[in-house]
Amino acid sequence: MTSSIELADDATRVLIVEDEATIIEFLRVGLRYEGYETVVAMDGTNGLRLAATGDFDLVILDLMLPDLNGMEVCRRLRAAGRDVPVIVLTARAEVADRVAGLKAGADDYLIKPFSFDELLARMSAVLRRRGTGQAATRVQILDLELDAETREVRRGNKRVELTPIEFNLLELLMRHPRRVWTRENLVARVWGYAHTGDTNFIEVHIGHLREKIGDKPPRLIHTVRGVGYTLRPEEYDEGME
Ligand code: CA
Image 1: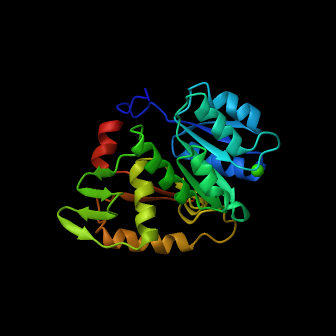
Image 2: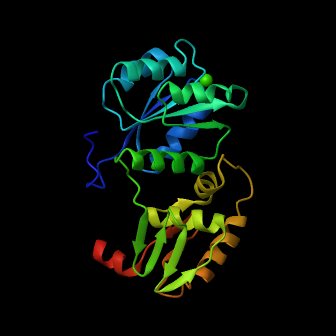
């Protein structure tokens, strides 16, 4: 692979080969928030053509496609000598196909329905294995440190114990300092599929998170009134304005 891993603004390009509109939207919106660049192909023929261009760092490939199935796309891609990482999406009924899928040269697979975080985790793992990883394992903001691999969090030199949800919330906020998240976006990203309705429970989780990381003024996690939340260290803020 020739992709650069040094530049943070060198967005990872993801090709989505999928024919189901709701899943395409779910992937596009979520990946864009994560800073990935996405291109969609809605059938196997176009998917194969685009994947073979070498313009992508990762391919998300559905198995059931209108023309050429995902397995065949993957097989032909590898036969053409293209080694772009591929994550296959498969329905539960097709799980028996997963071994065949991996034999056809896929790097990993996900069973539908999957949570967005699960996808991100698989993507990071695949990209890391291929040496094209975008997401660093460790994130640090001031004295707050998070290790995505060991799932450990430290504030200063004190270990912070978080629930899985709190950890995922914090990781998301830390990976995008200054980005303002609406409650809906946070729910979609941390809990999985889109949730419409009451999102007040987010406040409870944010409250616990603040307490556990000892977030006293000057705060890291800020409430943006009427919108949602952002993680923004004051010092960082001053330096940026
Ligand atoms: Ca499909």
